[in-house]
Amino acid sequence: MTDPASVAFRSTCPLASVLDIIGDKWTLVIMRDMLAGKTRFSEFLDSPEGLSPRVLSQRLSFLESQGMIQKVQAGRTHPAYVLTDKAMELKEVGIRLAEWGLRHIPGRVSPYLDKFRDED
Amino acid sequence: MTDPASVAFRSTCPLASVLDIIGDKWTLVIMRDMLAGKTRFSEFLDSPEGLSPRVLSQRLSFLESQGMIQKVQAGRTHPAYVLTDKAMELKEVGIRLAEWGLRHIPGRVSPYLDKFRDED
Image (cartoon, rainbow over all chains, first blue to last red):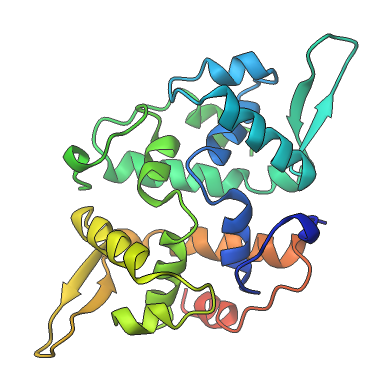
């Protein structure tokens, strides 16, 4: 379960509460990168959106506290991060959001989307 | 189409670009309220999440600029706001997010969700 103690939920509405966890411009972008196979802090920073180290660090800690990602040391100096099963349940939502973007926002390009769809 | 001129998209990724439009804690809450039949500024302020008039005003103007909502005067002093067809295409995403919240966040309650599902 998500740890409700660490989130100030605005209401008992399930939609609003989900947005209290993932309702920002960065969280689903980081989860997209994990879905695409990225696992390292430096890899997330490389994405074209220009996420700052400070925001990335905050979001990773928070997502870990909420059981959305797991830190995997795997014998290396820098940890790797992977999505949990709970977070993976949001994959279909991400695909649908991306499909909406392709339909309605000119000039969008998605090298990953076909791959993500095929995995279902 | 969405008006790309008024949004500083971070990349050409369709998911990141959708989040440049709706990626915050409030937008989908306002759209939820419209889906539930609310149309007036004062009705949106009444929701339990405690949205401020300043943020509401900003989000309504932005959503109108993006073709997500339409202002309907209907002969009244205060305008009514309704979702466009394009915005309605995100309804299923909202339902799935809420369902995820019901599964994973303790204590969530949704008086609307069954009604929204039934309309599909």
